[in-house]
Length: 135
Image (cartoon, rainbow, N blue to C red; front, side):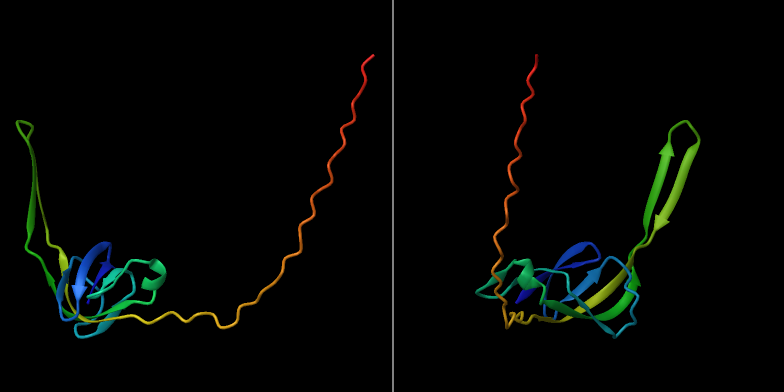
């Protein structure tokens, strides 16, 4: 069984036991678990679920393994013969996640449905036009 989950604006295909490197730092301590409920699709051996009403019940449980930073990316800007040079660097914060489980439960149906018969709507009376005679 696998699911497609949206985590911080990006979509990831996950299955139980997978490790996942997310491009943002999640402010949760290492070893803690959290649940993502923004599931986009779920697939089993026989069935694929894409209906948003059914996907509302699915959650993906993950455990935070570590926080780290990516390698440095150097950005250099230069304009020839103008004396303009800029050098800048960036290191992206990363979070390593382990997928614990993908769970979903059947939505409970409403037990009692009330049936009300609506009264027929009255149509407004037609307005009579008064013709003015010109002399």
